[in-house]
Image 1: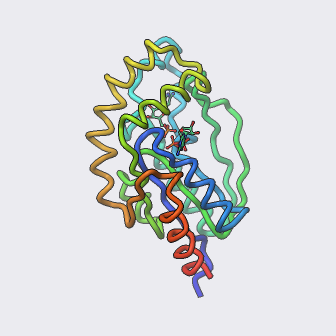
Image 2: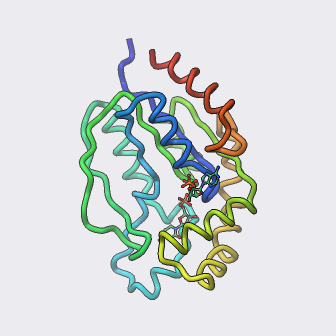
Length: 205
Ligand code: ADP
Ligand code: C5P
């Protein structure tokens, strides 16, 4: 019997509800499930001054150290613990701290671009894309970025127009074709959520 951890991929545009869905899956499937966010693996860019760091494109695949995420998922799948990085959206760099993560039966990997990378896709047992209208995502993100990520309205608008929207259209939206299942209204779709939970429970039983 294959006892290696079951890996669930949750992708979708910014503020689509990936974290909300991942948390609900964890609660329903396995309380000790690990949620590994691609965001933890943003490059530190610590050699670049803050004034320039804030202007970088954070929606292109090269913004992430995906090789490290792939390595960490492989380690967890083979029963080894990891020390994952911690990223700050306020300082736009890694904090220097790490979080020790022990392997468990279920790993949820979530992020805007996780279905764009072949090595990462190959590690997933089920791939879920959270599909939420762009205007809803825009409003949710605006609220979140101003309240939680310390952003001004002007910087939000500039980033959204210059990088978030074009990169979504170039990379995120096309990666939807790699999903096994597409969920409309992500975190608030009880029918889809229950079907998904039942299916995953049957697979890992
Ligand atoms: P993602 O991980 O895709 O960026 P989140 O799950 O963190 O998305 O949701 C982004 C923001 O939208 C959060 O502030 C969250 O509370 C809010 N949110 C998520 N789902 C809903 C919903 N169905 N209705 C209203 N707000 C929501
Ligand atoms: O949680 P969510 O999926 O929205 O996180 C991804 C988003 O975080 C990207 O769209 C990117 O623009 C944003 N980001 C940012 N500042 C950083 C790193 C990422 O605004 N320093």
